[in-house]
Image (tube, rainbow, N blue to C red; front, side, top):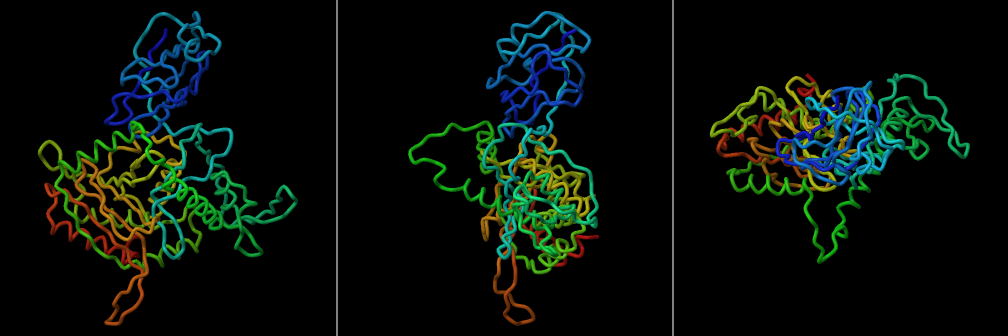
Length: 460
């Protein structure tokens, strides 16, 4: 008995999808949860996963071809069945013809999943969009230099203790060096050679912080190369991708239909900088807590105090959401995606950092699921990496607001009547005036500012 595999709807705006690459071929056995194809959607490249066991019988949509949502893209049969080879499979893939049955039954549902691992280790994950002016540290969002040609999810190696002894590593030329277990794990996940990393620990031992710093340097180089003005040739014309068209339409709709207004506050980040530095030096967690993670946590706490900001304008009414799902704007090759950290009101700062770390790594490899890109109730856009001192972001419909976070800069401040140099950050809240009044926006920003200037509250 053959079953139809349909083109699923992988995003709320998706009308059709294009097959980038088949990961399975006619005759291949497919297990529940196994990826079968890469699909280009209007939001991102995604991987389709089977919800059932069976054998891929026919491929009806060739690589590079598009089909509307609900169209039949392949046929699958039960593993024990046999049948005649399918002409469609031969034409689509030029693989040996599989056997196929003639009858059809109900469709097998499939859903997107992170892209599987490629044989070779991928390049380091892309850079993020926040950078401390002092240390050059970058945080979300990230940008990928190019679309991955193959699925590149990285398996998690066994957990190792941070206090374990550092074994001696030997390079290809016989050079000996030491690396901590956390550093070796981080290097393995990122696909980098520890020999390339400069160790700053005792006796030159390579620590996880050294690996993180190496990755940031590599990512920053790639980011600067990507945004070089030489990328676009003068006089050229580029066709819009599905993602770019979606961004263009949604942002045009947002500015046309949503009455934006903007509120800006300057925040003293000196204590937040100290908190981040202390957490990094303690090496108690595997993923460094970034400034963006701190901002996400502060936003979540402030939204809990002012739930009207965590709302949407829907069906000529205002929906105040029960959960705080924060989207983090992440730049990719051809536009912007907004992966979502869900139920932030229930997450600790460390848990937010761990989830954000995984999402940013996915941005470089591709392979977001539709769940990871939908359901945000509030969005944060961070351009600190570019040294941007102030900007305003466009609201993502139907959300009520979006926060634009800028770079942390050394600026003159007055403390106790004395002029001093402080580390401050400008934050601008773009608001939908149909939902939010100016006084509510101002109070929300003051609460957000209070949490960042007293960051011990973020650890509770």
